[in-house]
Length: 305
Image (cartoon, rainbow, N blue to C red; front, side):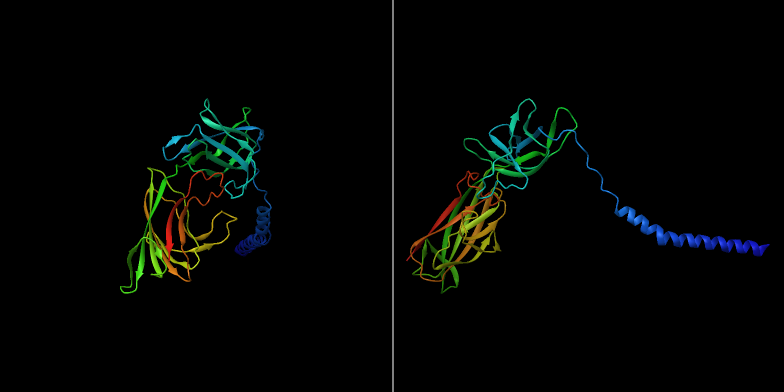
């Protein structure tokens, strides 16, 4: 009797082992296949996707206040770049301020856009801003939706000024310790130009850009430091993309304060009399001349023989 029970136990164990092996061989691949072909979740369908009233707000971060006038929100097709140097595309929609709703509105279809907001005051102070935005659909019959992102931020431009000091290289002391008012290419062959760039305006800023130095025949820019850090110096000879040429270095967003630039120059030929200009070409992201309402701050250095 015990032998019969023992045989049944072995048989049961064998059956379980066979089922487990079958599951490993057939079941797991089947489950993996089912998981692989599972369709992605269906995006929510909206009843209304055209002619939507899209609401959004615009803030002046410098004054910490909402903007209700004197700006122009313009919507362009997704991927457009209204900051480009030679931009010609027309806007798809233009926003206006709704004083009852307390927000800016525009009539658009659901989808993705590029929003450009410009300061249209008689004397503009706020940098233009470009934002990738999207408009959702809705199931509500009022056809009103909120822009994503809903809050668009602008900042006021600070006021920069540049002053320079020139020091010629002293062969005797081995230092740049001869104070000069210009670059005398007959008396000296190396110079240090120290530029002091003051940025003023509470809570304002100067947007990141480039400092250009005139490419001057017979004089080469060898090394540049910005705020004590050695930076890479590049040479731009093509004005078709930004309207600028010359040696340049890059700088980040600048808050109010003072920034310092040391430019080491060397005579490498036979330069004639003329002028080397430093240009603070701020907000390099925005190259469209129609949007750059400010005049780039400059400083001139005389070259004499």
